[in-house]
Image 1 (tube, helix red, strand yellow):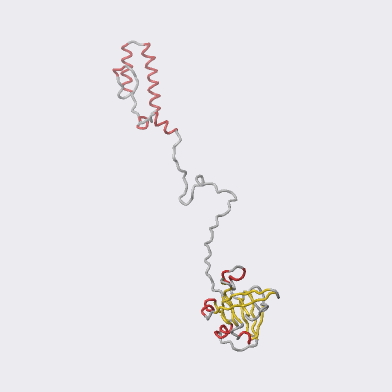
Image 2 (cartoon, one colour; image 1 turned 180 degrees about the horizontal axis):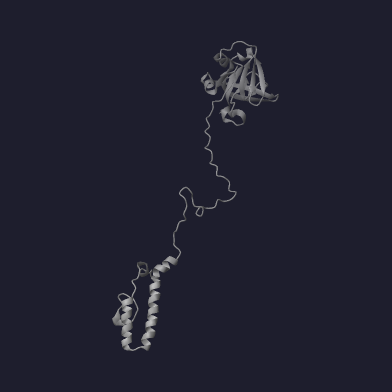
Amino acid sequence: MKKLLIFMLFLLFVVGLTACGNSEDEQEEVVATLGEIVPHYPQHLGSPIVPLEPTPHETEQPSTQETLNILEEPENVQPNIPDNQEPHEDEPDEPANEPAIVPEPEPAVYHDAEVGLFVNGQFLGKSKLVAMEVVEFTVTIRPGTDREDIRQYRGVALADILAYFNIDEGTSLIFHSYDGFAAGITMAEALDRQQAFIAIWQDGQYFAHRGDYWGVAPFQLVMAQDIFAQRFARYITEIVVQ
């Protein structure tokens, strides 16, 4: 196509030079000659320019707006990322040295275990103890020669507790307290229903409602005829028969 155009332009140049120096008859002869060389030459125009058919891609020229759109940066273009890979640009940066969040543990559920004491290795719960015959008795304590301390108690005779466990043999009993104290009495004293008691109440208040170790061992050995209270023992947790 380009070669044909160059050839035609060359012919146009030659014709122009010839036409300028010849007569009208000579110019018509030249035009006729070109008509034979170049097909479909428009002889009536007196010009050797041959129109060319434009190609499809030459006729479809983009408009100015389309050109600007091509030059502009496209928006919302996602990078070509594989399906199994997450984009890193949109992920927030993790804060440095941030402690890991540890879920709080669920609150523990506490069950009130029944308090009680052991008699020769056998457990006696408080509920079983108070189900026995509870008696009220008065004890006079003389901490000094010039005064008396009168106390009111409620409790169970030690003889009833020994009978509950079928204990009728032995020479002595040792009482162990929660605070480490220990006291001892004879078997004859233990079987005396007017002497030895396991008290649970004093002067209008249960031992279980007091502070100190009463909450875990609300029992007291009371020897009703011991006016000096030398063999009283608080916080009883165990009775051992020897």
